[in-house]
Length: 192
Image (cartoon, rainbow, N blue to C red; front, side):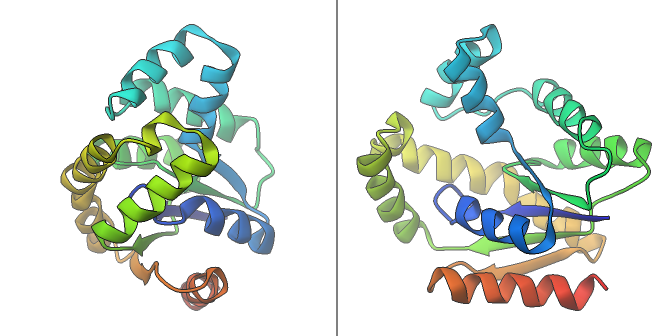
């Protein structure tokens, strides 16, 4: 089973690249952002609570997210693998995910990190905000807070996966195809 953690700050291109990886490797996409937006769209209690936090640039609690991931994994028992997009974001979440996957007799194969500098991220997110209408992508202050929160809370994950020899940094600047080629080469080299 090929289980990939796709990593990168807001605006790094995870959504675009995960779609291409899913098609090539026939993986099931587990995007916590999509799961949460679906809850928000349906107006569920969880969705309303999550929206309030997301609009402030704050992360949703771990136990909520792990529960959603477990039900998605259980619903896709015959999958060739999963791509985790937007999760884990902290070492505690990575440990919880490892524990969860171990109970399913699998584990994380690798962590691929899209690396993009802060100014490029802000520019991309402001453009995305104009196109998508997402409130959290239209305010430079909220964007900066999300990037800072990402850097502070998720940078230790690099160390976590490096210690397991599962971390690969991929330059997240260039054409969509160039970035995808780098990702695919990394996967093909380490997952035979």
